[in-house]
Length: 177
Image 1 (cartoon, rainbow, N blue to C red):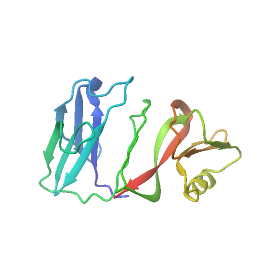
Image 2: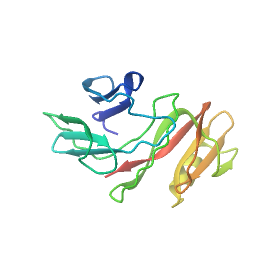
Image 3: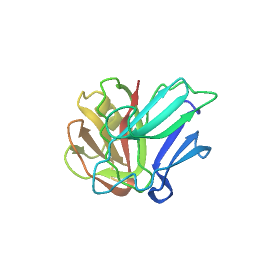
């Protein structure tokens, strides 16, 4: 994994701002997006990047309802996407794109656990849990509780709720373009 990356943080500053940074903590720009996220309703967002121009907006039509536009004078090559919620916050992400491929890597979100559906087994190692997900065509993610040695495999067609679980790490397949 490269140490160089872009981070877009939607709903920052108490759901008032969207922050764009290169690497953690190096904010390049802040965009006023008051009340962008809504705990009770799904919010559609789009994201695009080309030749160092990063853009984002609301809705499902690329280029419409733009809320963020930034040109990087020294653009980074984008080879993958990781999606997660902030630590201690639950989120559900639906990414409908045929251009995104599974590259058999996982992105982790500490303190998260899936609460329903899927297959759960005990006395598993983290490696065995990851290998089970990798070798399953339908696996989209898993959560692993090291204290209980619990592996929970999540089918890509399931819509799941997540919960805080201090002993679990939720892993989703990283996405690459």
